[in-house]
Figure (cartoon, one colour):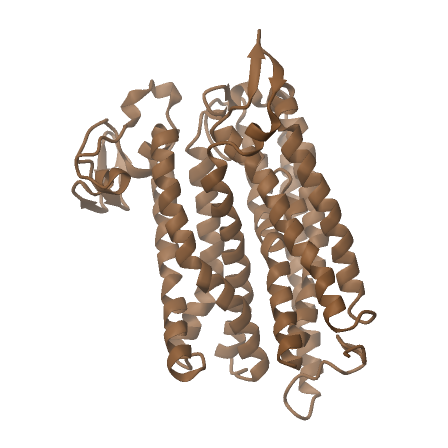
Length: 473
């Protein structure tokens, strides 16, 4: 849920980059915690909506399978809430311990969005408890409506924290005199220029990650021969959400890339291998930049200029516009991550269009193995695309934490963080293994219950599952 990601966008600015040797351990520690936590954050933002959609389908269509899925998904969500609370707490401490320069200098500016996030998290936590507890105690639509504030708070919390990151990309809304913040215009901080494209891009990414991940679990079951109504419904609901939003995400991503070309031209230059400012700039698909040249990959003449300004004559700013010390540290990593994000996003369009066509023609999903294999692949593909997107966003801004105002070297702690880095790696490895084992145990228990059902279709009215328990009116 959004409360878990209090620090995700803010700390992303220090992810695995090289502005100085002294801040490297702090960046590695933040990168390790962020890379793990952001997956939980995406699930927390979007999964409540998917759970509510399943319950809505179940209530509206008197569909017991959809209701059973909604309850089971909410139970799994409860496990992820607990794990996300742990990793989110660690990130909260790391903000002050690893990056005191950032908080000391700009803490008063970032107070409003973090404060809003705290309020949204409180609402989210309260209604999450009511929703899970209320399965046996609230009837019908009364229970459904207790879940709506969870989804709304998740989106609100995400908007709050992404506004922090977008502000770090385009700082403004404050006055500084003699190195001290003297006046803050909170709403200009919250609704900064970059938030207009960065916030929807992140929220949609969360829905793609949650939807495709949930669907991939049932695609795996389908490929193993579990071709019942339960697995088809479990795949169809989250898959429909993610697949329908994928083309929207690609359009917003395209808009965001052009905005980055204008707002952070050096980052864009690293994304697209633009070494010199000029027109008729080519587009490179893949390739490795070394010693002033791009090796491998596909070169498309003038395409980058065309994408930026809809004309091959468009002048694109290269990284030669700033000194070497102010350029991103690894254009190859940034470019390849950008290509991976776009390529995987395009790949995820294919099963969505295929499924839509099949449903339009036959009112059912395709039965071919290839379609379900694509559905399985889309889960990890969405996670990888999301992680690559954050690498592009944050490493591309380097060496700046706050763009053109504060570097990672100025923001990082001077203390030795190797012991805490070691502890974090051990803790997060244990958390990851324990979480997967617990979720698998829950899944096996549910399958055992389902196998005892002589009718072959899961019955949500048995005593120990009972999502409705005679409450339906």
